[in-house]
Length: 56
Image (tube, rainbow, N blue to C red):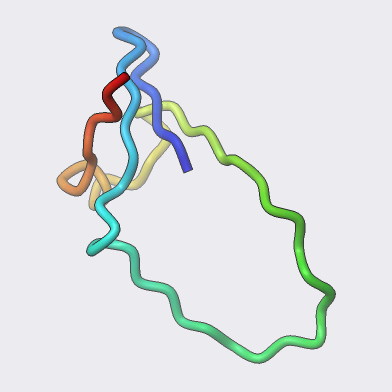
């Protein structure tokens, strides 16, 4: 997942310690990996304190 500030072009990712997934058993087929890109104003407020700037 990549989060971009449309005003400045700055790129962010979430701190890995903040990520919390609950795994559930599924009979669905394996999903394709994909890159999700969000604008900074599209992410939930609680994510904003856990952003890490991506440097070149």
